[in-house]
Amino acid sequence: MKVYINPGHDLDYDSGAVHTDTDGTVDLRECDVAAKIGAKVKEYLEAAGCECRILQSDNLYYDSDHDDRPVAVCADANDWEADVFVSIHCNAANGQALGTEVECYSRMSNGGNLAQCIQDQIVSALGTVDRGVKEMPGLIVLRHTDMPAVLVETAFIDNDDDADLLKDKWDDFSRAIARGVTDYECSVQ
Image 1 (cartoon, rainbow, N blue to C red):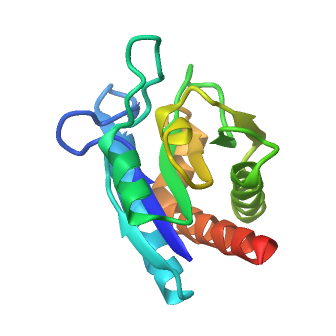
Image 2: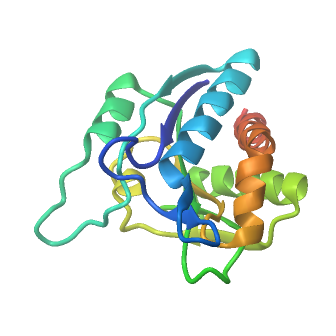
């Protein structure tokens, strides 16, 4: 199986959400967490026999009536003819919200099945709050990919407890995402 891994945001110009320590200093950036998890997911999936490609990018913006163009990461995944697309992110809200959710274009699709497989593995492995699988058809990476695609919101980076998981258990997130992908692969064979 060909798996396209997309750690969200950009290391240089768009860090995504952040966690700040008690004195207000940024101590964790979404782009760094996503990059670290994504690289390890690639390693685990390749060890399981998958062919992987990885590209980090900012891809969270929504379609509008005036901008319905796929971003480069979608075009690259489509041109590579990936079997699945996995975008990795951290959620953020108000500092109080916590948990894991996986977004897909439609729950009643292979993308929905992939999302549920990854969601189940993360919640089981890490004990995060199960926020469920959510339909987000407006997300460009879900709308403009030709293969089943998901966007994994691993945990809330602005919540202290979830941030600790992202700092200390990032490898467990990586393993769970990889297991979710292989669970999905087994379910469609």
